[in-house]
Image 1 (tube, rainbow, N blue to C red):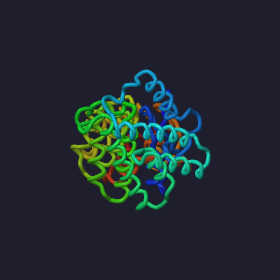
Image 2 (image 1 turned 180 degrees about the horizontal axis):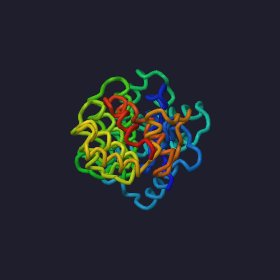
Image 3 (image 1 turned 60 degrees about the vertical axis):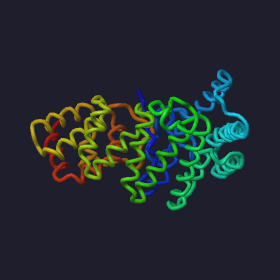
Length: 327
């Protein structure tokens, strides 16, 4: 099974690339290969967001009364938002930056609460301060749109199944983009709070923000919080989960029988991680768009995002090198 990773960033341009991530359906593009609103589809597999335009049209035909009791000026605002979102679908398929920006601006001229249009503009700026402002606009627009369509208490009444509701997705994308931007600007606690809010709205975590939440909590020294993430989202068959569990236990206990067992389990899920972590095997110049569980590509993606936590844990890399030598 191929998995598409969309953390969309490279080391130098981490913030800008990740702000464009669009992780439709819980699938995500690889770091440096964003498939988000500000970028075209990655190679190998179709951009999963392309299905949203189809889903939207099907749902509009099947449930024309989905706007509920909205009437008058609010109904007109919703109609304009629908038209703006259709333009965004075209923008996602645009092959040039100029066309993408032009379509985003056209969408915003119809509806300034079109969060995905703001995100497209975010993805095309290298200025992190400007990007921060655009992310704020996107999140505010997305929240206004959700409240307009589902009522003023939507963030409470609809909590628990966001993302399954198609029209909440722009808001969820905007929250993730804002969280990433906050993290890169040093607003660490605020960034983590937004990720927690996303999991409150969508505990199923189709966007995969639990990975970022673990990384950030661990980096902040909140080992209890990081452990809670692993316990809540238990995925022992995945390399990321296994190696993060081994790291967490080593940070807590050092070299013990329990950590050794966790390391063995992690090695079973992906044996390529140790060489990349310790430098025995060179990281490739680019990060893959897709990977299969247990593959070298999965290890590259994992190390790309988690090497800092490993190198920042005293003795962890020596421990891994020693325990996995000869395997």
